[in-house]
Amino acid sequence: MNARTPAAPAASAGRVATPGPGLSVVLVDAGGTNIGSVRYALQRLGVDAPLTADPAAIRAADKVILPGVGAAGPAMARLRALGLVDLLRGLTQPVLGVCLGMQLLCARSEEGGVDCLGVIPASVQRLQPATGLRVPHMGWNRLCALRAHPMFDGMADDARAYFVHSYAVPLGDYTLASTTHGQVFSAVVACRNFFGMQFHPERSSAVGARLLRNFLAL
Image (cartoon, rainbow, N blue to C red; front, side, top):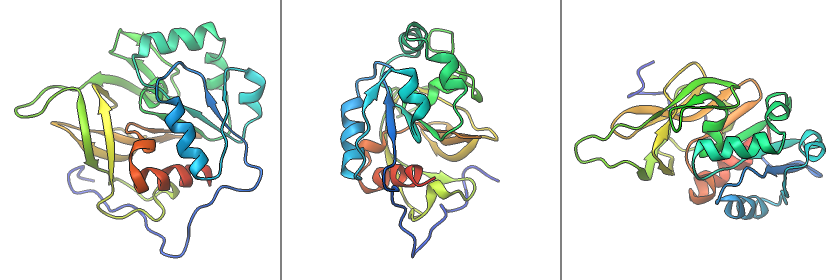
């Protein structure tokens, strides 16, 4: 499928995903600066997700979210120091990486030449500046779904999300949605039980709230 003319996000006029009662969600303490805003966004959906680095709590959760703002090298160093790398790789429940967290799910990042978790078979690459376009990429971009997925239930065709990043994941079989900033790259990814959003759902208004709600309903 041509990434510039993708299929519209799957819509479901009658279905509104809702977190189940007693749903256990945790935020992995990878040292990111957006943790508080992600937690508040989840609270608005009726979910209180504690921040934790406790392996038992992460393993027992129904859903795991790996947020992050910063650089891949320090974030991976923190996960190694906490003894969480192998644990995160081996999780079987739905796991969501947000912004830097999505990049940490990949095999490797050009940012510092660091090996990451390796659950998404991709290498994170630096965005290339283009005429009239700045790096880092900061602003609202359209999400272009490449195939139908429950993550997109109820999403409008022109849904936009807020991005702040200098590195990106190229398109691949794992790409659920793309966007463009001088080049086309992955905006939403999925591989087995691992999902990622390059943008900030907690700063993406109703679109971000719907995507978080859909993830919680998986």
